[in-house]
Image 1: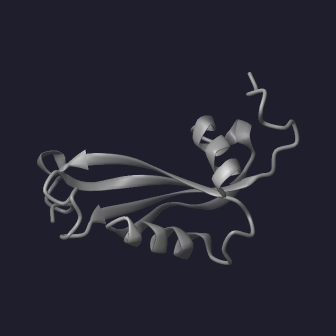
Image 2 (image 1 turned 60 degrees about the vertical axis):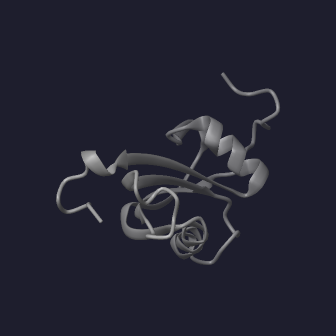
Image 3 (image 1 turned 90 degrees about the vertical axis):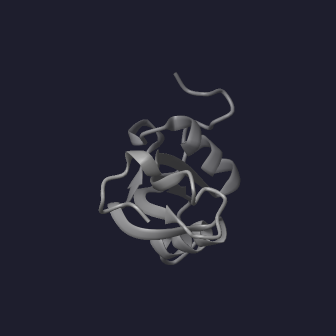
Length: 111
């Protein structure tokens, strides 16, 4: 069911997933080993969506370590989490962290 505030002709957004780890000075560093970050961006926000997201995440204390899913323009109905898609329509971008704890990380993702 469509949210009443979202127009029927919503634009496609860039949707992609980055892998990141907290920087040593970040408050999350002691608790979290890393995260998959689901990214939503309005087309035209940045020439390079991955670079823009990487810069945003660095400002939030996270270092991008890989691209899990390449940017692809998707409709709302094809997006993994519609509520975050809707938020990006309002804010031009949205980032959703799916973090894992340091204790749950394998040897390759511990910092």
